[in-house]
Length: 352
Ligand SMILES: NC(=O)c1ccc[n+]([C@@H]2O[C@H](COP(=O)([O-])OP(=O)(O)OC[C@H]3O[C@@H](n4cnc5c(N)ncnc54)[C@H](OP(=O)(O)O)[C@@H]3O)[C@@H](O)[C@H]2O)c1
Image 1 (cartoon, protein in one colour):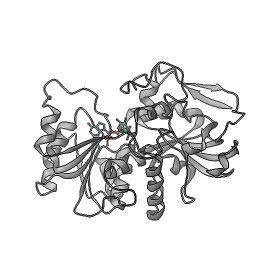
Image 2 (spheres, protein in one colour; image 1 turned 45 degrees about the vertical axis):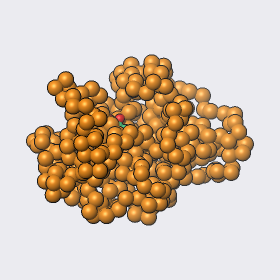
Image 3 (tube, protein in one colour; image 1 turned 60 degrees about the vertical axis):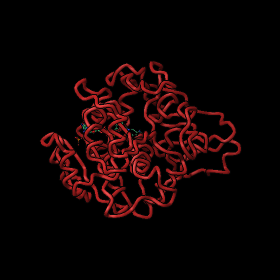
């Protein structure tokens, strides 16, 4: 079989190699024929050797990149039939051992696409507990979009809500940053929950697409660098109840200025940088306490929340937004395209 590998030394250095098809399944394992993979910003960092902010994860070694896939179970190991059967359509979970509750540090060792080999491969062995069954209405490509983007966006909104009782209501404002995988997925989820949405982008064209998905308000953060003031105006001076903080260095201080008093900022990403500018260093403690903000780090979510997301997707018939699909042989080009930031929503690689 074929699979992609990276030595974490550059997006132009990935290699498509021959590898033996896995055999000899152990207790509780299943073999999955992978149909579709979706890409995440993290995958580009792994391939460039820049995914270095978790101290439990070693960079530099050879690894099969990417974490998110959908495929079909083609073989069961001993004892795996308790959870799955041959022919089940399944999606991977991000940290394979994170099954419920808050993530703990040892779960980081089971991260797909680093430190574990990921899913840019034709066949992969999984522990049966590291997979979720996907609803029939989703195609392989669509379901592959969900493990990281949808679970992260869901947890960004609902991490303090009990399972089965997500945040709802038009009076609740959610701010989404940019129009990448997490933000567009978050927009779809927030709309389906009946929340009021504000989304930012550097592109008016992408903001038009966001309006097409039901975005209530849009802001071009390039033309309107003081977008935090616009958010305050749009919310009658109150601020956004929930902010999915995907931007990082260039957005966080502004998010603290336009979050509602007592609101939630979910710390998700750093697409605008990992280090604050020297001129912009108001202490985060002060920023959080001024408006009684909850600032919550998010590392994806557990398997039982992914299953909650899938039930919600099925009931609302949400279809993930796929910007572009690439053939398996073009997976390196797909990662470069993601890194260019030209996309709106998700990018998919068709494996077979
Ligand atoms: N914590 C977690 O569990 C978790 C899970 C998933 C992702 N993440 C992180 O979240 C971030 C987003 O991930 P992703 O997969 O959605 O990435 P992505 O699809 O590559 O998103 C890229 C988009 O980010 C937007 N962007 C860039 N600079 C921005 C800025 N200054 N302000 C607002 N938006 C900006 C751009 O949107 P426009 O083109 O519209 O301007 C760009 O298209 C990444 O840092 C990723 O590592 C974390």
